[in-house]
Structure formats: C-alpha cells, structure tokens
Image (cartoon, rainbow, N blue to C red; front, side):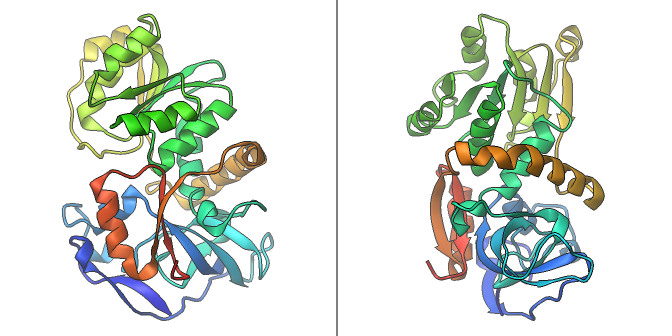
Length: 328
C-alpha cells in the first residue's frame, strides 16, 4: 500500500510517499481503508526534531485521525462489520491507504457526512468532551473562553459547547477569523493581535470574568488566563503552541479559588480513553444532525502531505486541514 513515511524527525521535507505492508488487525482492532485524514497539531509535534522523543517512540507513518471503510474486523469485535463507514483515532499510521484502529476508538460516520467532514470529528469531539465535560469544567448557562477558536478543534468546541447550553467568548488572530466566529454565534470574538483579551473579557463580563477557559497556547497565557477567570473558575490547557513555560501569580490563583488542569488524549491509557469515547458518542452524536458541519479549510492529496504540514505551520487556516487518499 501507499503510505507517508518518516525516516527521521525534521521539517516537512522528511515526509515522503513510499510502499508499506498492509497492517493486520489484532482481535480488538479494525482494518480500515482510509478515505481521509484529519491534520492535527500533534502531527507537527511528533514530526518535529525539537520534540524530546526518540525515533522509536515516533510513528514512522504519521496521522492519528481518519475516516474510511471497514475491510476487516478482529476476532473479538462485535460492534462493527465489514463495509461500515467509520471515523476514529489511531495511535498513528493514518496517512496511508490502510490503517488499523482499536474498535473502541471508532465511531460510525453520520449518514449525511462526507468522508472529509467525518475525518474532522474524532479528535475535536474527544478533546472537547474529555477536557470540558469529563470531568465537568463548564455548565449550561456559564461562559467559556476559547483560545485559537478557528482551529479544527476550536470550531467544533464553539459549536458543541453552545449546543450543550454554555455561552462562548473566543479569540482569534485576524478580523476575518473573528467574523467567522461571529457567524457561529459567539457572544464576543476578540482579535488578540488588536486588543488584550483579559481587558476584553472583563469588559464583556462586567469585571466578573469567565467561568472556564479552553486553552491551546500554554505557558505564555498562564497568568493572563488566571486574570480572565471568575472566582472558582476552571482553566483547561490542551495545547502548548506558545510554549511549555509561563509565570503564575499564585496569590491570585488562591484568592479566586481557581483550578488548573492539563488535558491530553495522547497520554490517556486505552481503557480510560475508550470509556470517554463511549460517553462522548452517547452524548454528542445525537446532537450532530442539528449542528453545523465542521468547517473544512483545505484538502491535500496524500502525496502532498508535506505541503499540508507546511500549510498548518503557517497558521492561517480556518477550520480543518484534510489529507485525502483519493487524489482530490
């Protein structure tokens, strides 16, 4: 089969198309003919030479989020059959014509979703659900601040959180991106390059602050996030695009009784991840028919995976970057 191969860490140029053996599913796995792959920041992190991981812990074939058709089921799998359309999260290897995925990490594709749209769901839904609702960080009627809200995860977070009854304030890096967020119904879209988000949040909330923050920036925003939170607020950090280190005013943290939690699917064990995925499916999937579909920014053919990585690193996309195996 054709697959994207990475022989060593580096820039996008280390990603090349080659031939690989079709993997065989174990008892609990599905073999999926891949139709589309969702790009994520984790793909950049796993490829980067700056990430402190030995080569043996990196995936030779990148890609963690996919949609496609089941072509073989493991002996102990009972919830999927050959021919089913599924989307899911692999441990790597999705940038190929075939990929094996645990059946517990897969969901059926909604009937009215294309393969490209389905590939934009698994990581976003799981990240939002496990970060904000399992355990709960936001309740109906409360206000959530989402940073980087025009990313693939950010847009799904905006739509899903609003559908579950919370209000959203969102940050983005241009007026064009803020206009997209306004169309999605956020109560305030903040261009963080033009105004300070802490001041904007406090003005919007009459000085109270937001109830929770969903942050992919990391260290550099730590102290300012605490300043933007209300008393008893929750900060959930699910990324570190701005860096891993930051300063924190502990006195403010204590005075406001604020809780800070990290969230990472990558470091969640399989059994716990499977439980969270079942809960997300039961609660979120019934809502999808009433929600706007994920925004697809662009689609790259499998042979242009390196270009997809370059494009993501530029940071100008709005919505999901998709890699397609059908040449589109």
